[in-house]
Length: 120
Image 1: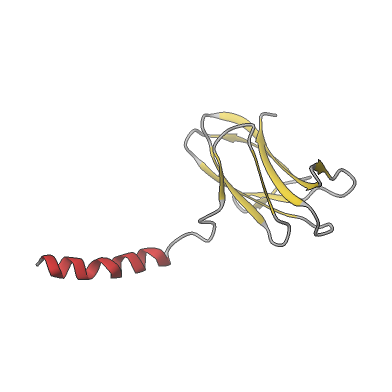
Image 2: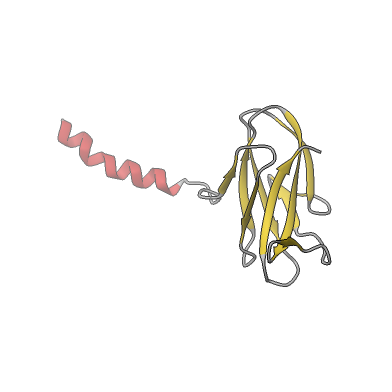
């Protein structure tokens, strides 16, 4: 009986692995005031786990050599799949809720792409 249960364990793990979210492995932001940065080659995604109920603003920006690129248009930013305007999304976060943020740069592919969560 024990052998029968153990032989089924790898199959259950395999099936569970097939249903992992495509955003799995994305960087996590768990604090208001935090920022995460990544490359420009593909859309950069982070997950924000709200630590409290609060009005917050997510922003995307391109960084070149440690400074924000203010000459170009702001990178596109989406919140849970909905496009925001001007690289910013203002929303009411609920404690414990997970929000998915994704950004893509439309300008030159140099530097890094950053997403931050702040209070408005």
